[in-house]
Image (cartoon, rainbow, N blue to C red; front, side, top):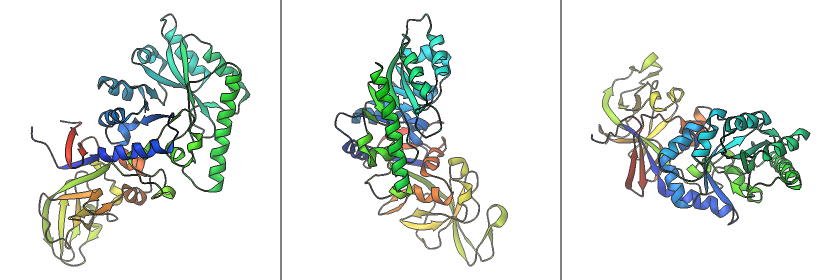
Length: 390
């Protein structure tokens, strides 16, 4: 069938390569790079992004769950994959068979995995998760029992204790208190790994650094880093915006469906929340909240049409929204409108939309609906198209 271009996302693989090289330049040459491709690569498409990361030289990939890992394996991606979240123990054999690594966050979970592997002769590679202050998954790094519990796990024949890691929750802040907290967490992490080493428990891979820590604290890189959002060209926090030459991969685009003139005093869209203050020219766009455009942006955001900003007027609908194109007389049906991203020399950062909806770019990117195809570009040339529905 013909390629559908109603609403779509352009993904710059050039920018992915640039960001990868930038992040690599921050860390020691012998430090491994784990590409975080969970949540469909933060909305960018896990399989195409993973393939590019493989070509660029990434050493590991990370996903959130078993389903995401299986997707990569079914796409013939052979890099080691680490599951960062909980996987039911009855999948233990499958993880071994597929070469998947599993995080282990408690002695109880470890024993469940061990029971599932009993009698199989199979050995699951695991990464121990230490909680140094995130208060999410993990063994408490400052708990006296943790050392003995990890020693017990490492002694089990069904496991290969390949890695140990933690996560920094405030590494994206430059304030003195946050920097001190990140340092404290790192020291707690290394104190535990050193105590384990003294007890004869060694790990091939120790990893702490997320995007912010990779950029700001390469001294904490240890054996491997785990950049997430920075790989996709987005600053880990507003505080760090512009500090590094990160280049966003995604530009979200849509098309003009209809253009009509309206007299003053005409209500637009549900509830009539916008009324034309004077004669205006209104265009209907083929994007709505079912595509991932938050309804809360109604009457609050502008897009780019022929490099000029056009404001959204009226409430955003499920499949459409309206913009005022009075100041763009050259607008025509079928024209491309950029919701966020670049349009020639003009740009709308995804951060702007996230800020207006009271969230972060992570959520905005992950929210781009699966009915929105992704076009992967090498410069201006289309390399691949990812269509989830057709």
